[in-house]
Length: 352
Image (cartoon, rainbow, N blue to C red; front, top):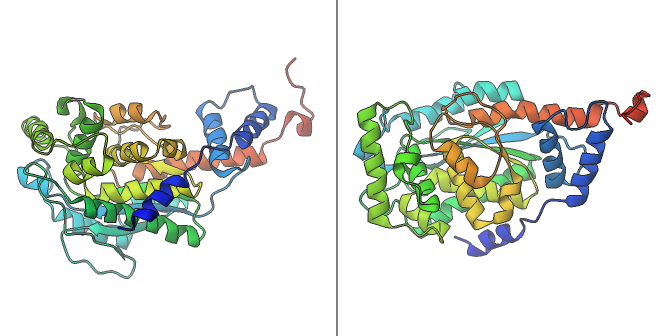
């Protein structure tokens, strides 16, 4: 990997624009409503101003970047679906038939699917083919990837954002597809937080109690075998991560380096966000929490990130679906900021 590009990307991630944030807060207080009455939407308005440097931003072009990769750990029987579903779902995304496609059409977002590690040979005119390898190795028996492969995958994410930015995209949503990927996500969260897999492992695609117990044991085994170093995010990803997770780390860092908001979806995306935070503390300020996933470890990782999701929908689809749903709230506050009357313009008396 071009290590300079990764370092340069991280170095470009700057603190939020405090002046714009204060101006946005002042503007909100002048609007014809009680101060603070829009709750989290007002916090979002201030954050968006800090990210973009604009009090009244808008995001007409937004992309859902769906990173797709397979996982060797599925050999351990930790998921309800066979690995063949990953390439099948990638083709479904490209045909426009998945949940994220439907919700993205409604939200005016474009779905971009990146093959970063699918264990199949895929070809489609709209597929972004950036395969690092055909799936990870089984992390229960040894490292999932090499450090070089992790770095290559992060670079794929950074370059995907760069390409999108050159086409006018200014807001990004993290999406993913990879049968078995809640397993490495739980391992990543445990590695960084020290929490037991009993706390971080969830039911993923809907496994029963017996498989859940086994999944906890597999994650613990992966941690014991690999001993990931939480002080070294690349090491954590290489030992217990996934290609699509590493790709999303690059998306998050790339978006933050370009002062673009990045909407974080559910558990897998949040695990990637946790890695990104450990690579750049400033990056977390560019993250917008979308929803609380039904996956039990999600609330734990959200707490570690310190972001506040807006929706509580009991969803566990993945793909970027919760992120896309939250775009309606982003649009709502952008319109409030640009269209709502102030007390002065409306001739309405403010409170004493």
